[in-house]
Amino acid sequence: MFELLGWSLLAGVVNALAGGGLFFTLPALLALGVPSTGAVATASVASWPGYVSAFWGIRRQLRHGPLLALTLIGLLGGGLGALTLVQFHADNFNYLVPWLLLGVSLLYGRQLLSRSGSEGPLQLRRRGWPLLLSGSFYGGFFGGGLGVLLIALTGQLRLGSNLQQHAIKLYLSMLASGATILVYSLSDLVYWPEALLLALGYLVGGKLGARVLVWIKPRLLAWSIVAFGVGLSGYYFVRFYG
Image 1 (cartoon, rainbow, N blue to C red):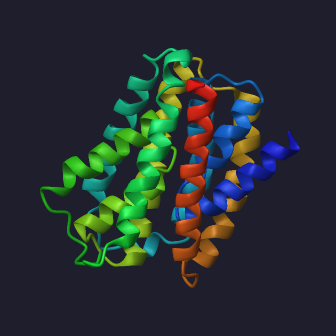
Image 2: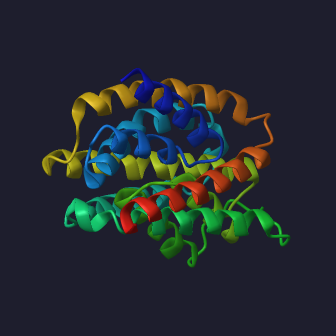
């Protein structure tokens, strides 16, 4: 269990900096014998305190942002995604895990290679609603690499400065994760002893990550997450399809 706490601490830092913390906690839960759907639900619920602490440290970046629209998007998308997950049997969901990890990793890598720029005014245009709603839905459904996906989407939309995009990523992640708590709890998917331990690590890690976010250049970390996600997807392709 101490290993689980260590992985969640690292995941909290990574979530605040670049996203992709579930890449660390999901394999740790699966290694303990938790079924894949239960592992996703447990990690999603446990990540909420970390998102709260990380967003609190950067909340001023969204002081004049479209908070009402983002709130609706985060809660609606996260809740719908969680409701979708509970329809899956763990054995069937196993086959989706490597594809989801690989897809998000490659999408983030593509965004990092883009030369078109990713910054703009902090205005949510009409075309941004379905994109961010789909990102929040993904957060409720799986959540692995959610921050990676949201950074890619906000970059494509050129929604604010780089720092404001990180704040949007954390805000939507916090809301989507929060929306899953009720759904997953009522569905008995959450392994609560593991969730509480993970939450402690996420909380401390998120606080640490938010403190260094304002001065660190996360590009190297981001590429490390891409490489780790691709490698992890390969491992699960072998495990679940081999």
